[in-house]
Amino acid sequence: MSSGQPIEPDIDIATHWGVIEFLIRRQRFKWAASCEAMSGSGGSGNWTYGDYLRLHELLDLQGDERGISSDEMHFIIVHQTFELWFKQVIRELSETRDILAQVPVPEDDIPRAVDHLGRTTEIFRLMASQWTVLETLTPQGFLAFRDGLGTASGFESFQMREFESLLGLETEDRMFGMDPIETFRKLAEKGGKDKEVLERLEEEQGNESLYDALMRWMERTPIMGSIFESEGDESIVREYVDSHLQAHLQMGNEALERMSGMDGDASARMKQRLDSAQESATSFLIPEGGVSRGRAGLLFIESYRELPLLTWPRKLIDAFVELEESMAKWRHDHARMVERIIGKRTGTGGTSGVDYLDATARYRIFKDLWEVRTILVKPQNRPELLNADFYGYTVDS
Image: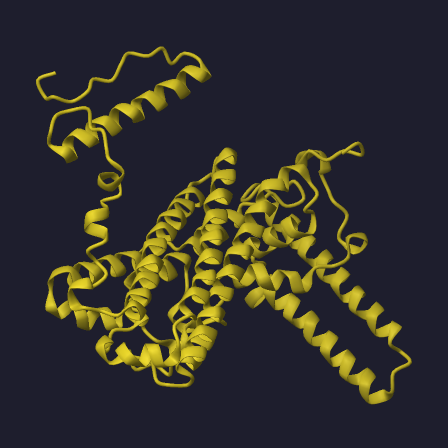
């Protein structure tokens, strides 16, 4: 023990439970070593509540030395809390991306990805409720210290830009096609931490996004029992897509027939809408003349959700949809809070204020997961399932 660090015990890991016990005890020893290193005392590494949470440092970060009002302290604490949650969001989403970036993705990793997404969704729901706390700030109360913010703006939250990039929000999908890190390039000219922030954001932009990892995973979905890139897979997938599109067309024609009693103009408009819907379904599944296997895989999962083998894949898709829905609601509630407190004033960072925030509430990253719902057909109209036993489905299921 010349290093002063704990020595990991020799544990029999021959059995499953032995492995678990080994991992738990190893983590405990690593934790003890970390405590000793941080305390510098060489002792047991026992923490007090304040030391463990670093409360003395944390509670010195709200600006008391500037003699701020309770309103301004409230404003600061809410936004600091957001940034702490953003840090956790980045961690959860990064681990989800790492799981889905594997080729292949181990089946028992999918539940872990669902858990990461579920926690992130709950974080956004919690953050949405924090806007109601901020709404206790009156318009006059905010104006009393607003000038002290200078040009400081939530637009400069580099963690928000990081998790947006991690998710896969494209520049062209942003309001006015705005470069999300242009602001940070200017700040980086000062060097120091701002330069490190820019490097971090540029690195994230160069990484595979969570959306891309998800689509590559869906591309490998077995369709009608056919494995991705196996012999004959392309023709099987094309046949499935063509069959679905035919069923989609039939469903539209049946709807038009039910409305045959409408007057001529109304009937013509209805036919035009149904023709447009068929065209959209075709371009979604067969963009530029070639079948999108990723979208076909998504359609297959959504269409045959009851198949046992697809239980966790459809839970994963649902988790992504719930996450994006919670983010959209969080952004919408942000806009309503701002409108309630400052009306239509220009934002401190020079944005259009509430109009800009309303535009961000319309951002969609996982567009395919939403659009596929538009082209689903009734269960009785979907293509007949082939190789049902491949998916663990039998008449007794």
